[in-house]
Amino acid sequence: MAGRKETALDLAKFVDKGVQVKLTGGRQVTGTLKGYDQLLNLVLDEAIECEREQDDPLKLSGKTRQLGLIVCRGTAVMLVSPTDGTDEIANPFLADGA
Picture 1 (spheres, helix red, strand yellow):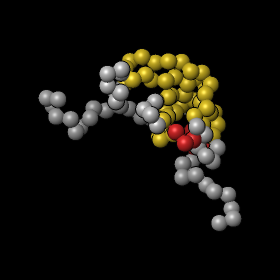
Picture 2: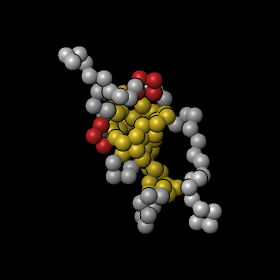
Picture 3: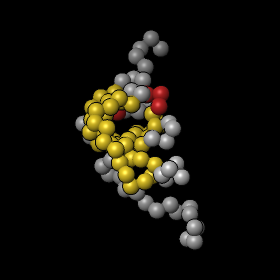
């Protein structure tokens, strides 16, 4: 085990492509991945934060906030997903009347 540690996530294929990043604390950011390191620190360009509802922090509001060039600290990153090729679907577990 004297070699370099590899991350479980191969982010090389997402460099210069759009990604959506969910962070601890409920923040969600979308931007272009410009760089990363083995600790999962991410550099995003043209980053946009999707704001949450004040009364229900689990729901996204329609508002966004331009952030520009940011660094997401690896300890706060929970999820990284590509923005291209993904679509939002209705929750199949919700009852029709809910």
